[in-house]
Image (cartoon, helix red, strand yellow):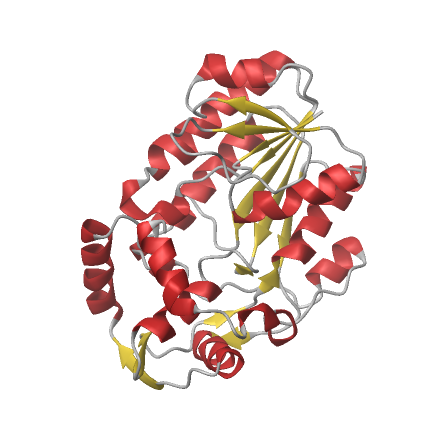
Length: 310
């Protein structure tokens, strides 16, 4: 049995169908909510409902589980989601429950740049969590990934929503030359799935990125081309954008643009271009080749749905 935390998130929703199609028994740990969980349709999985910080609830969800795929995070909730409580303390409770339940392996999704001494909150928390997992004594595989994108992501799709919201300009943080290495979520879940049967990945930190280096500005212009929403690029100092992001977080029910979103652009997030091929023999897809889903979508409506939930 495989327990997936954060199963209703971007990566979890892409991973679950693959696990089930591959014959795995999957159980999802879902946090309590007044609305129905956004699990993939027509994918038969078990569901356990508990906050990840509730030891008893998580321990009950671990019955019969041999592998945990740990994806739960408050990263994209902005300051309305506590990384300290959900990510760090939640991971600590999960590890305690896993150890008591005799779980034999943990797969964890981290970031390139994870470092407990980082100046940036997301990278710092990821570094702390990696250390907790390594010191737990449970066999692990940590995936440090470059920027992830796909049909339900908030980063690349956030660009399209911003283009639709402001009709004439696009605000680019700093000089726009931060180097990224976008990795398609479908390629990532292939690596996650294959690693389950690959014992050579045990107790390893695997750093994975896409097949090309792109600056943030290049990615924005590619999205402009695909969505047919050309805009003038205006470079804005990151402190000013952080101020704007904080205002949006304070006054909107859910903002796609948070200070944590900006943290991902603070440093170059790159690794070997051949990393995925070297570890898994897989040739990852290029950014421009896998965002055709962006064409023709009503990104103004997507923005309203993202912010207001309708």
